[in-house]
Image (cartoon, rainbow, N blue to C red; front, side, top):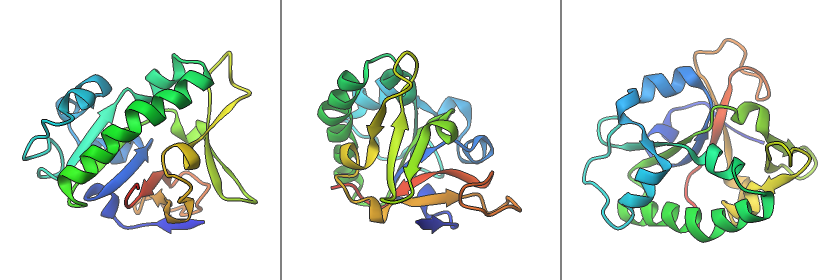
Length: 173
């Protein structure tokens, strides 16, 4: 399991974030864009992003979109719509910006298989017994590059403890 204790995730790559204090330090509420606004930006990316001195885009609403779909639809949507938009963001900013998806319940819903270190998303009711394979869907199997974001201000740096505030991938392909 890769651990990320620095703040590179605030400047480049793609992150799934659920640490509320880290979110509030990164972005003011009016700087966070909805998932709908994110999709509207594709092909019309701004020169300066709204957060972190123009280096970061924080997106809210991904969790709600996936939760409204059954797992098969959710997976298909993530592959056909979300992933191309994320790749377009990366292409536009050439690894010089960060894309952060705010997932308020992520700490309880992102799970890692200890044997394979594969990450999955626990679906919402009535599908809570099913998972979406994040590694296959979003990271094209490159889970070895995924790091657990650990809050440097948390005294408990256990990678499964309260300091675990998200996941970061340096570049999707």
